[in-house]
Image (cartoon, rainbow, N blue to C red; front, side, top):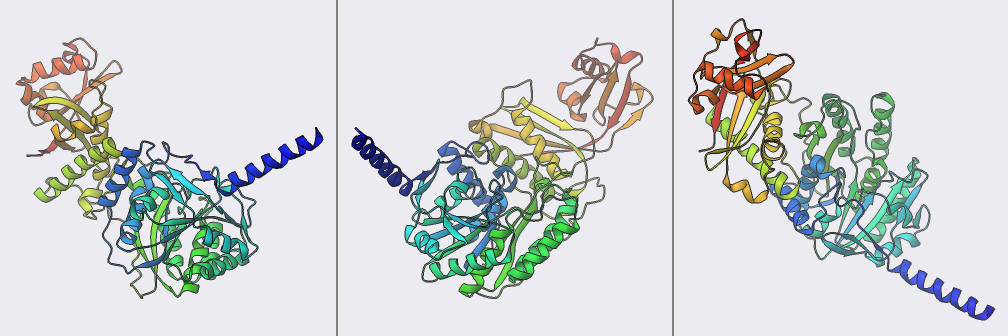
Length: 499
């Protein structure tokens, strides 16, 4: 009996060993950081790559990319992969950070098996992982830090789409000591020096300052990375963290970054340039008071200019008109925001530096289908940059107007988009000061309120009294509420629409 139990134990341990050697790391963050449905995920990668910047940089040995939710960081991630997708790679080394394993001082290699996303499985290059582990400490074979860590998984669908035949080398790099990243970087370079390999360092930048502070801090971090001196960058970025108490980190993937820099140096790549930069406050859904920074950097063998983003994006002065080109830019951005959000749960990143788009304004976006209203949502306060409020209201009109069911991706080609950019609103002493067709009107009474855009009364054929009566009804009040004790504010609108 004891022999049977012992034999069964050995058999079970043998099975566990086989399973461990061929383990498939399952997708954990599909449906939260990126789409879970395979068709939608494939569309998301395609949409983000199509929206990405075109770079003329030479073939990179390594890149730095962000790993936050795609609705915030996916555009910057795609910028890097659009560049590398012009080239071929047989293996992609993915250097993740250790959000969940703070005690890790070294590199934890997922040695064998595969990583799975909704797009399928990507096999691990065991010849490289085993050689890397054989190099010895601080590199070890340990799959545990990978299990609940997103910094590699979030990047993997881009690897699968851009390099479908490539194998991967997943490594979590953690710690605080210089000798750790130095040794890991040297060991990594040794095992890939004869391979057609791309090294990918996964890191977001500053965490939780306001958008302008983030931009200033992140440019310092990106400049340090572009020095291609990993020891100097390591100390500089740690110094940035010590000198800015309003942030929790300047780069959550500092160890992967400097490891990649060291490996790239060892491989002969001693030049770097920023591909793109943004923070979550630049997206249409981000909170500009509390942001995370994202940068894409290419480390190359050939010398390239170090191009850093502008320290501050200008905010335009007030305007009375937009050019036809500016109108069309906003209309395209509104449509693209709706199309990408409905089709793949992603969003475009607005990149036009024209100051007029960066001034603060209120705006409404109106959607019509076959001439009938299909959604209209707006924001009256001039407290948001014009491009952001247009994109945000476009998505809201498509998905959050309580009068209509949300649109789906099949409806996008059938809708017609109209944008109303609002002037600041001002109080008037009497309803008699309201001019139909010129003024939009905000009515307030008994804590209730309602608003009509200037074009509503004209489109409906209402005179002033009829318009005010309908406005009362919209506010949930008697249609004669406007005659006594009602307060009015008026505004004007610059209205333009798709052909």
